[in-house]
Length: 274
Length: 222
Image (cartoon, rainbow over all chains, first blue to last red; front, side, top):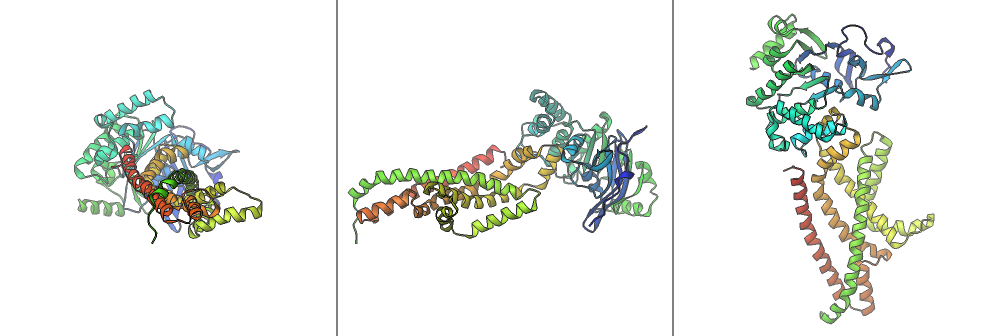
């Protein structure tokens, strides 16, 4: 049996100046005896673009999945926008979040997946409208206009009435980005969004993400294997190794002058692969 | 060797056709019960409650491993010993509905498990409610691959309705038996029953195939 954690060490909410948009506080995630995240501390400021790189199995994707509440954490607390995400306040104490509380908090976060995960029985436009109409309760006409604008922004306006099976991988991923944005999240998560794409269409997706960085004040967390893109676009790059952050720095520093041997090894291995 | 008697055939045809209506009714009612009960069985096996999952799992296994005729006898003859007295029709519909619910629940279960995990995750990331996720996202995708199996069991339940004659439901088989024993002629009534079953089964199977194709097209799954 796992020993119950003393939650009183964590604040009920984050206050003061410079409250981060996302905070991982001593977060541990285990699958049986396998530890995926080992007491992770990570802050992401509002409007910041943080990229996570590292070898497979280092826990990169788990960071995003726990933040999207697709996986529960075993220890620690995640805060979003100053309030706890994985826990909630009850009688002045933190307790594990209820489904209802999770639903309320989850609305601040959007996610794009490696395999797009568009709903195959709906058109591009219907995919984008599903959440706004049925979760946010926005009137159909308004949701439609907003979804059309977003599809326009990702360059998919002319394909709005197509089902995903008629779209290329790059096109599907752009629709998926529009679908996530339609929920008006404060934090966007990109989980290896170009890994399943043919090389020649990667650019159309990265260009959309570049545009989000320049035009929107979104907080973004991205897991990627594309080092060049990470270098161009990130405010900060975190190198993950065995469930911990081995090194984090602005991209010019991390890629140009890595401090850790492990970071250096990883970067040179990646360079050879290309 | 008995010779085929056309006059006798025409004479008994109206009675057989009237009984056909009962057969179709029995198959239809039984199937509707099976469809809803089967979905309940399938969804019950996906709840977080382990006890419920195990109980339903065992019940489905039990029903699938015992003969339909035994289940019909059980509901009709053993029920009264516990104070549950049912008419042949009601007992028959309960038994055959339950029997096919067990089979349909397996079809649904396969269909539900077929939907990629990513669809659940996308629904969660869009914050869709559990009900909305099931009825708008998951079930529409689980259905098309299930339709072929569901169609097989629709034809199956139709062909199993003669078993209801054992408790005296006045369907096609029971009527043919009566005609036979009243007239000491079995060739014509049983042959006609066979032809009637054939005439309904064959087009139904074809119809179900085109329905399957239509649903897939409608949902953009091709």
